[in-house]
Length: 340
Image 1 (tube, rainbow, N blue to C red):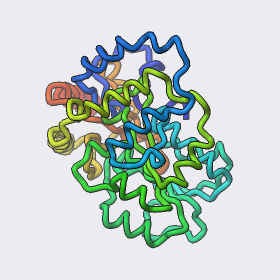
Image 2 (tube, rainbow, N blue to C red):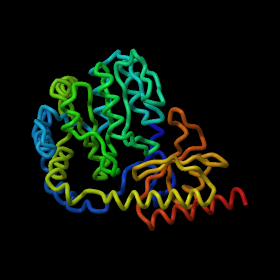
Image 3 (cartoon, rainbow, N blue to C red):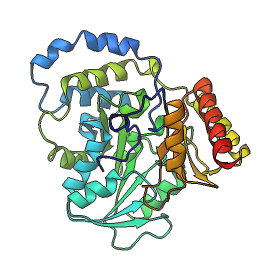
Image 4 (cartoon, one colour):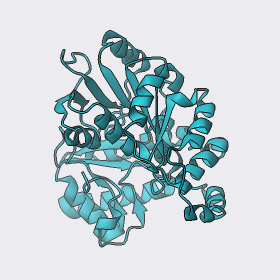
C-alpha cells in the first residue's frame, strides 16, 4: 500500500504542527547523531558495501549473536518483502488487524493469503504466520509464554514476528538470541521506530543462520545506503543515549486513553505500548481527522483501512504531555462543534 499509512505528510496540503499519525515517537535527542552524519557526507561519493556486513557484525555484537544471525535491511519493510520473496508461493496466515505490508508483500510474491484473528486455532495447512508484537494498530502484546508455546506447538510453521515496537513496551517479548535458536522464527526489528529516524530506513532481522542466509540470498546489492549504515553503527554504539523513556510514554498513553474515555468520545483498545487505537462512539474518523488538520494543524491516523476495522477507528501515538494536551483540547472542541 503506497498511500494510506500514517505520516501521510507528503500527500496533504495543510500545514501540520503536530503529527500523531504514525507510530514514530518524535525523538528529541538526535542532535549528536545529526552532527556525526554531517561529518560522513563524503561517503555518498562512493558505493556502500554491496552487503552491509560491517554494520551487521556490529549489530550482532550488540545482541551477543553471530553475524550469521543478522540481516540488515532498508527498514523493517524491506525485511517483510524479502521474507515473502524468499518463501514465494506459500500459504500465509496474517494475524489481523495489522500492518498492511504483510499482505501486500505476500500477494506480490504469489502467496495464498488468509486473515486470522487468533492464534488459538491455526489452520493446519499454514506455512507461514505473520504477526506484529506489539501489534500495529492495536498496541496489544501477546504474552511471551503464549507466543513460545504456539511456536513450539507448530514446528513446521514459520513464524514471522515483527517486533518493530519492542522498545516501547515493558512486556516480555522474544529476545533475539532466543529466536535465533529456533528454526521456525524470524524476528523483525526497526531502528526507525526505536530511534525515531523513519527517513533513514534502517531495520534488520534476526533468525537462525540457515533462515537468515536464505533471506540474504534475495537481498539486492547496495539496498542499505552509506548514511543509513553509518547511523546504524553509531546508534548501536551509543544506544543508551537515544533510548526512549518507555515508562513515561506508557504512563502518558494511559492518561490520554482515560481522557478520551472520560469525554465519552471513543472506546480505547487495551494496549501495552505508546500508541492507542480508539473507536468513535459517534461519527467517523475521517471527519475527526479532517477537522483536526484543518482547524489545528494536527494529524491523526484514520485506521479504517486496516483489515477488520471500519471507518470509526483512529490511532494516535503519544508525543508528550504538552503536545498530547493540545490534541485532547482540539478533540473536545470537535465534539462540541459536531454534537453540541
